[in-house]
Structure formats: C-alpha cells, structure tokens
Length: 141
Image: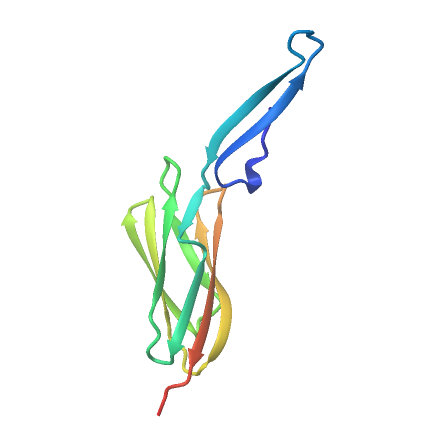
C-alpha cells in the first residue's frame, strides 16, 4: 500500500481489501495507520487578526514549531504590510520553537490583509506564509 500524505495532517487510518482465489478466504482487509506531522507547525494556525480602535489594538502571536530533529533557522521575514504592522520574532527553544508577535501600527482606520513570509533554511519548507488581517476603527472623540 502507498499513501499520498501531501493532504493529510494528524492521525489517519486507511483500509484496503485484497481479493484472492482462495475458496476459504476470498478477501482480507489490510489496515495502514499512522500520523503525519508537518515539517513546521504554526500554532494555533497561520492566520493572525488585529481588530480594535486605532492606537488600542491588542497584539496577536503564534508559535512556530520545528518538528524535525535538525534545528530550523528563520533567515528573514518579508512583510507586505510595512505601514500597518510591526513584528517581533523570539527564539523560545533555539532551532525548534519560535514566537512571532504582531502589532498594528496603522496611522489610519480601515481594513487590510497581507502576509508575512518567513524564509527558512529547511529545503522541504523554505517559506512559511502567515496571513495577517486587520480591522481598525477610528478613534472615538
């Protein structure tokens, strides 16, 4: 049996029926079970929302977890929302766990959506894409 795990995350179980010409046992079920771990996990997910009144928007964060034995280095971050957000990357467990914190720095109210693209040294996962959206209301007078 062969399983394409490119679209599977977490635990899985697959079943195949093998048919034969054996008179006493015409078929047999084969089971394949396992767990697929992504190369790198974004917890709780790859999406951050910044919402609130301009100047008083709570920051958001996510955890980046390397699921390999070899350490992972984040070589850089591209930010297509430079006038809207500021980010800080903290290394919690060097090579294995990072914390990405994002805060709104908008000078005007309005909605936006963009990306932070994290460049890594892992050839199997050279980029991690994080979607950032904001909904910033004007200050109340």
